Image 1 (spheres, one colour):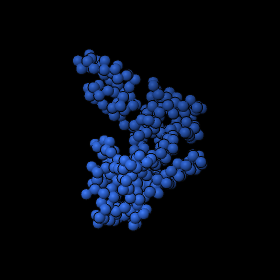
Image 2 (spheres, helix red, strand yellow):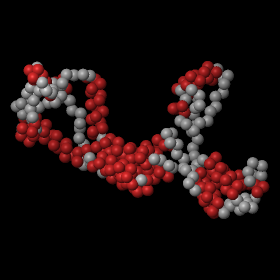
Image 3 (tube, one colour):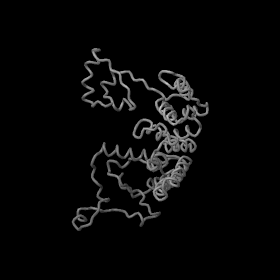
Image 4 (cartoon, rainbow, N blue to C red):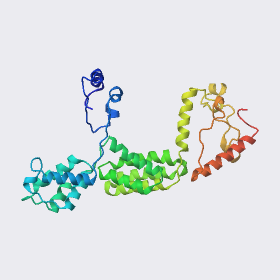
Length: 327
């Protein structure tokens, strides 16, 4: 992944004719770091984290190996301490061996006690590549857990990210997005609570602030969900792309000057507060070409069910009104 895209292109003809056997290893996602032409000519193998049993086997071989390991030192390590190293390594063999090497350097006469092992594993960060696949996989798991209404799983992924050194404010920002994207008007309080959690973290600092974010995570995961606003906004943007710059209808235009008033700007505008139920039945606020467009389709959950009932009632008033803007 250290090669630029143009340097990677230089490999193509030699890879194709077999002059070069291309073998690479990377901790990055190859689909992001290699260009498509080179990637299509390669076979990608994904290396999975090692299981605990694999780690224990690695430690055993290293302790017994006289040539490349510590066999000649007769290092004594209890099964509990081996498991502690395996757990701290978090699936990474190189990390496991590095910790063992540090422990051996600290040992007296080949004796590795609990205190030494705890010292070498203390504060050892779990697998977490800020900006890489694991980073985005974990925040994706948290987001999907909240969306799927699983507060338990959401808290688990949040704790995983914190344990690995994630900035809690990143989670706070994502929660604000979730409040609009996945909860919306089903429970508008979610947006307020997520913003309050963000503010609480800034005011309290990490120790207490992390709990405020956990509070918001549980709330967002537990309340009714709706993506109706999210879908409506996307539909509105698509509509704008398809219809471009339609004129603002005259009755909706601002008329700050006499000339604009004479040109008909603001003419026949109906001030909703002066009408029954503060609603101008039959009025339309779209350009005439879009008079029948519906973008927002409220769901049946939470507060949005009441919003849907209200909008349906207003549509009934429109249908019965003799003062329709467009026929």
